[in-house]
Structures are given as structure tokens and as C-alpha cells.
Amino acid sequence: MSNSLSSNLPAGATLQGGKYRIIKVLGQGGFGITYLAEQTGLGMKVAIKEFFLKGSCQRDSSTSEVSVPVTDNQDLVTKCLKKFKSEARKIASLNNDHIVNIIDIFDENGTSYYVMKHLGGGSLADRIKTGPMTEKDALKVIDEITDALRSIHSHGLLHLDIKPANILFDEHGRANLIDFGVSKYVDSQSDTTTTSSLVGFSRGFAPLEQVNATVSSLTPATDLYALGATLYNLVIGVAPPEASVVMDSGLPEMPSGISDEVKNTIICSMRPRRKERPQSVEAFLELLPVETQPLEPVVVDEETVVKPATEKPTKPATRRLDKYMLMGSAALFICAAILFGVSLIKKGGADNSQHNQELVTANEDLRKQVDELTSSNNNLSTTNKSLQKQISDLKSTSNQSNSSLQKQVEDLKKQVSSQTNRINTLEKDNVSLKLQVESYRPDAERWRRQMEMNK
Image (tube, rainbow, N blue to C red; front, side):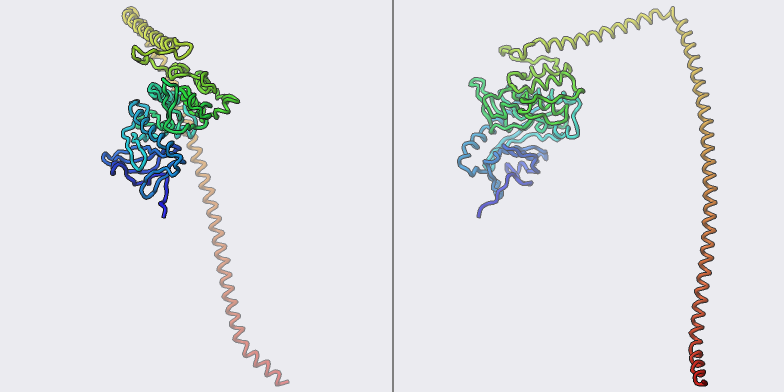
């Protein structure tokens, strides 16, 4: 008898000898299943990602063992499983506030698992179900995800599935990038790309080179397309068009309430040709409004050669200079105001008399205004009393009318009662007459027979 099959672990199942207890499934994609679980020793909720290649793996529900029934798929699953584990370790080493924190990894049930901190603040996709975000809130999220993306790219890793559903919020409201199921390494030495899975993509958030599964052409610009598409989704409130539509028809016209900088960021990031997009996170940030630009420069190793991000490498410095000039102008204005106040104090002795006279005049004006307001208040009070009297009169008239109607109703009730009594009396008399007629009926019958005999 064959064993029954299932796709996921049931609620209550345990891993690592009871260290983790499964609560429920949070999500399932083509490359794995994510569970909400409890770390039983600490009583702490965690998220556990299980490697489960859809279409290639199956599970025995009685033992929870994962197997590959088709021999031809074994090499693919083995390769993907190896990459799954190595990339989990790589992600764990990133140590970024906006990348989900991986705290454990282990093998069990014929597959592999990694354990993450549970993020209970909901997803970005949930926040835009009822409508678009404000531009300010959207840019805050994008700024936090670019910080995560900078760390990812600096380690030679591509995420390749950036979208609102893969951005969760922690208890502090910070955005965290999750789900590295289709992430890939870029080998800068051989210019090749490796992957923990098949080339996957989310419609509307993936550019043509990812949709067409040309793995060797995937670069940081691929992630930046998805980041621009995510910004589109946040500020417009609808899913971005698919890459093929953008290629044929361009992006739809965006609402007028969106700033020119944000529109330009979306358009540049979602260009169909990869080389025409921003090629780095820094180049992407240059396109955003000034408020989102970081004031602190990125510190790099002295031996690292930093190439210009765009054709205008001085643009961020110019924007920061504009900020400092604005802050300096504000400081000068405050100093001037303080000096002006001090000069007034020094001059005060000569001007006190005049100042006092001005205060007296202002006081008299205020008194006049108070008197006028008091008079207006009295008039309103009188009007209010008049209105209250009219209301009282109306109530009295209404009560009188109501009393008259009630009297008429009572009279009618009395007449109806009198008529009812008369009808009852007549009915009784009728019954009595019927009884008398019945009592005379035998005598009448005898008289009729007697008369017939006499004839």
C-alpha cells in the first residue's frame, strides 16, 4: 500500500528534536515553503523556510520525508539544494537592518531548512491594498530597501524578486527584504551567474532579460528595474505593466500629483534596455528627490576603486552643498534676529515712554473690541430668549391641539361603546323572542289539528 503524499508539514509537526514546532504555512512558492513556527525553548515565534522544489519534490505525509520521485530531476534538485544552503549562509553574514535575519540552518526530512526572525508588522503589499501610499512614505520604504540592496550587491548577490509582497515590516516599522528563493550570485571573475533555483520572475516587477531567462545578462540593473516597479506600485496603487508592454507601449501616463523626480526615477529604472537603466544603487539614489539623499558619504576601503555611477558624478555633492547652504542661511537669519533683539533692548530706555503710550492705546482698542463683543453677545442672548419663547408657544399650541383631538377621540369611543351596548341588548331580546316562539309552537300545532277535526 502506497504512502499518502502532502506538500507541506502539518501544524504541530516538530523539527530538530522538538526545538521548533510548526504553527502554520505562511507562504509557498516554486522553490520552497515558509512556515510560522515557535522556538519552544524561548517561546519565541520564528519563520522557517524549507527547500521544496515544486514539481520535482514530494513528501511522505506519514514520515514528512521529502524525496525526488523522478530520477532525471535528481541532479537539478541536488544542485539547487546546495545553492540554497550556501546562499542562506551568505545572507546570514550580511548583517543589515533591512534584510531578514537568518539565525539557524539545518538538514532534516531529506531537505534543508533555515530559520529567520519572524517579522510581525505585515507586508508592504498589505499596506497598499486600499490605495497608494503618500510619496513621502513610499520614498522612506524605498530608501530602506536601497540600503539592503547596496549590501546585497556588494557581496556579489542579486535578489531578483523585489516586490511589495517580499517586503515585511518589523516591530519598529522598519522595512525588511525577504525571500531570496530566486537569488543568484554574480561571479565577477568569470562574468557568470549561478542560482539556487531556476530563473523565476514576478510579472510586472521583472525586466525582459529576466522574463526571457537569459541568466548571463542578469546584473544589479535587473534588481533596480524591480525597485522602480515597486515604487510605481506604491505611489500609483496599481501593479506595474509587464515588461513586454513597457517595451511595446512604454509606461502609462502617471497621475499629476506625483513629483517629477519620482516620475523620472520610475521611467529611468524601468527602461526595457538594461544598459539604459541605473547601473548601481548610488545611481538610482541620484534620481530620487533631494530629501532622500544620504548626507553621509559611503565609506570604502582606500584601495577600492569607485567608478562614477552616472555621467554627472558631482550631482550628489552639489545637492548636499545646497542643503548646507540652506542650513547656513537659516543660521545667519537666526543670528541677525538675535542681534536685532539685543539692539532693541539697548535702545529701550529712550523709547520706553513712547512704547508705554502705544500699549495704552492698544489697550483702549482692545477694551472697545471687548465692549462691542459684549454688546453683540447681549443681542444674541435676547434673540435666543425670543426664540425660546416662540418654541414654548408652539409647544403649548401643539399641546392644546393634541388635547382637543384626544377629547374628540374619547367622545367617539363613548359613542361606539353606547352603540355596542344597544346592539348587545337587541341581540338578547332577539334570543328571548326566539325562545318564546319555540315555546308556542306545540300549542299552535294542537290548535291547527283541532280546527281540521272540527271541519
